[in-house]
Length: 317
Image (cartoon, rainbow, N blue to C red; front, side, top):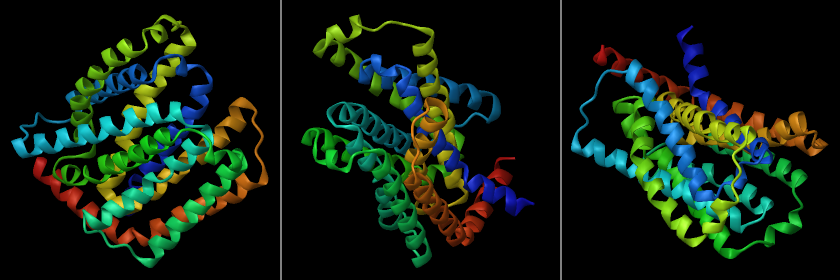
């Protein structure tokens, strides 16, 4: 029973990827009407408030050391860099470039897991990751015109590459704090520390483009979209993403990120009536096969992480 529960928790990042995939549908409902840096500030502020509300009633008071506060501040910097460059880079590129560059995040996570966290990259894990990557690319090729990949601006491409690397850093370098405390506490305090950083960018955006704010029309649809971004795709998704790393290593969690664009395509078909071709079914099957292979490869690692989590829980009690 415990083993089944642990495997389920190790797959929590799949729910995170699904929630991020849902942002494709939400974007169609109009949240792009808000200037990008203001939108990301609203998203993170809502997410931080939601996470802190949960932490305040579910976890004991903590007294973090200066070293741990520095680590949390470092995560906040990674997070600020990731989302800021993602939102601005998306405005400077086309859809196909954005989708393809986003899937580089798990590649960077695997690289950081091996080089910075001393994780072992087995042949089976490499095979599973390759299957998931190929499956995701098959889906994206079916969704976008490959000839448009060379369009868009070079600056936007660079920003999205940096965004992918920064989110990989936010993911991988959170691992030591997750081991020491918990996924919920780590992601909550890192997110809280990032709020002032995002807030400082809003006046800059206001100064550079004051007309963009005058065009914003507050509607129930727009409010709902912002709430989805803040509560679900930030608070819930980031918690699920970090929760997986309580029970698996970063390179195993990374493969779940590939599900994000696949979920976006499927939700677009189910909710927006968009066409889904055979390439989506083939790519989705390859993705699932890759996730399964990586999960099997990481079972021994999950057992080690589970024992560490149990030890931490016992000590806190």
